[in-house]
Image 1: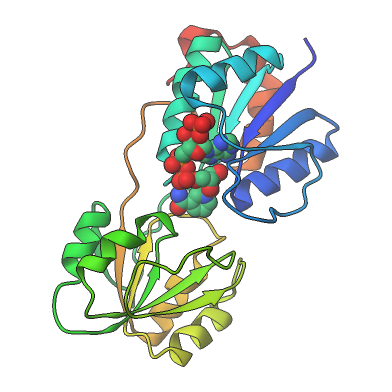
Image 2: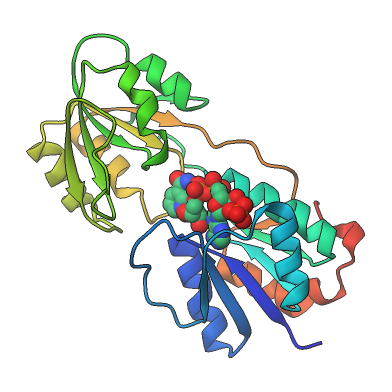
Length: 256
Ligand code: NAP
């Protein structure tokens, strides 16, 4: 059967994979949630928007005769990743996750690692500080429980409604950023504390290396738990799976 891939994207890793698949002339579609107004141009056909839960994704896989499902979404995009595991089993389409190891503290880092957003909010109790809040748009409201801080927010698109934090500065800018750019941003806004998700990978690491170089404290939020699934950490490993493993893989082998 001719391979026909669906790649769940929205990350630099998915864009790297899209380039490689296109260069191999493989039939593949890249899927975006539709959170960003103007997604990056891609060398593959793209579709945009949710599938309608597990059933919707399983139907999409069947209706479009998808042979391989690749989850290259962000490690904090837990819902779509859980849906991918369930839909892969429902539709009998092998699933591979392209992910990245979490960041680990290095010499010079001053990190407080917390399990989730509510623990990060709790860790912000205390006197007012200037905080860079690099957690994406969705969890911002939770930080209104610590209104004493001035929050620096960086977003890809100008928000339609003001962020739900009384005291903030907004920077509209699309990454990836360099360490020098992020160090300049942190200095310009006189930031003393960074709150970030432990995304791993290279696309968003600059703010952490910048915080290290400036000696800033960091509250780092751990990834949400995901069901067992087959995972790799490089585009080459995805290609090896396509070349050697996936075509012969049975449903029983998934989830390893
Ligand atoms: P999420 O909470 O896991 O997913 C919520 C719903 O959005 C899913 O149930 C699905 O809707 C839809 N969805 C998510 N990713 C999709 C995709 N690639 N293609 C089609 N539908 C998708 O997701 P999220 O955290 O909001 O992230 C959304 C997107 O932004 C993902 O593509 C992710 O890679 C990217 N992103 C997320 C973060 C982050 O911190 N969460 C950071 C950078 C990039 P249905 O149930 O209707 O199918």
